[in-house]
Length: 267
Image 1: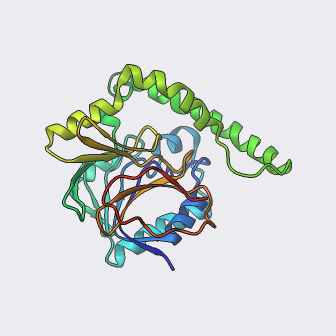
Image 2: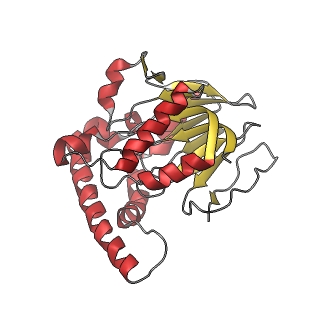
Image 3: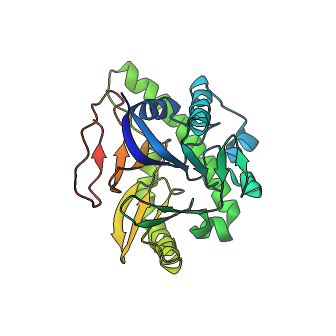
């Protein structure tokens, strides 16, 4: 039976690419059900499909069908497009298959806290000022993903357990320098404060996180390429970061404290 939570927040699924971990996402969706489903950008990767062609697996198609099914069955689904699916931003304020498309959204949690939901690319100085660098980085990232797929086959042949992402490893090593220069979190938190909310939930940088920063709760969904992470809101309003590293893991009961908790690894 699915674990019932109040809200699920997903970002950076990158459907249409070979890097998309659709099978793991399907396992997660089987394990969790919700009243609200928020899709915070880069759900479909039009950038990759335009430059490298479409890579669409049966599992990715099932992900889309599962989302549409939830939208038809009384789950409130809100889609905030990102830079990789920015074409959908032209349709903000409309409904697609009972899915609301919005440029951003303010979600009130069960405990009364208000969270600004955005993708986050509008706070990325590379995207804003040097779009060509971002596109070049995407091509390099795609190459790392293809190399990682080959390494994964070697690992399976050698009987090495678990999933390891070369692209994710490289991004983690470089991320400290990048965040020092561009200060993504500071920009997001500053904007949330200007909007008068208690916290912000975003994606974009593929770095899952949940912590308080200057009095504002900063939450990043991560992605379904490297980290396979999601944010869930429990019935009491407590937010939790889920790392879906083992689809077969038993889901423990949520803690009763209404506060942010450390990351739980589903393993």
